Image (cartoon, rainbow, N blue to C red; front, side):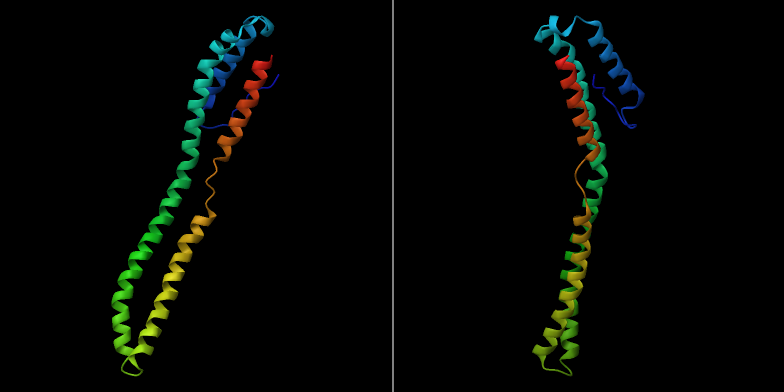
Length: 158
């Protein structure tokens, strides 16, 4: 017989007690060969509904930190874009006029543009690096869903 195992977390003892109660209900009922499909479905329906609700809650809990970090990275990228725009406007003008005293104006504009491109690339690279490191898969949820599916298969095949 396959047993359903829950890790410590939001389900806690209440979840374990419900699973144990469900197991008792299945064992105390008629033999599987004597049960109709309707009886099996009627017994399983509330437990499966609760299981789906708990899995949804687990997925939401597990994905919240990832979403928060993705939001932070997106905010950094947006701030970098705004900063780059303002920086580009004012520093370009200042730098071009300053360098135009010593160099032709087109060379001064080219130098200032290159510097702005490097700074923008560094900021964009920092934000993109954070996004690349994020792992959006809810590993615990996937693992417990697989355990639950295996357990349900075992209960139905009894």
